[in-house]
Image (tube, rainbow, N blue to C red; front, side):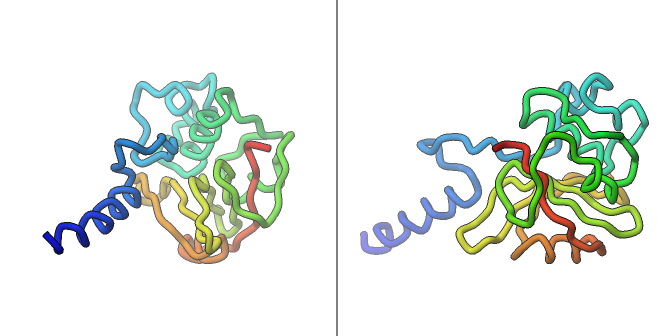
Length: 165
């Protein structure tokens, strides 16, 4: 009986950590690749990167996820295929160096990289959802900070574009 009493808190903690708690409210974190029926990703109305044939690139995913979070098309001043221009093409959103859920992490480099910050830990660690252009695969990962995330992508961190006030 003692083992069961000790195991229950551990199992509940593990369930919470991986999002399996049926009693907990949904956090709406992207845990998997978007379905082909998701209009925010697979429609040129919401995602110009879709119509440009960039499905699977980080810009395609970030555009779709940002639109999904907002419930409408995420607007930029211009749409270019490279992520390195996102930071300078912000239109109507605040940007800074402070991570927050529902923000876009931006970096520069040869092509740059963008990802969506899904959550921020008490210690400042960020959990992002993203696609990698080279492999065209969905990925979630947790990094100590934006600089570590950008370094893992062989880029230089720029900051966060905040989708929600």
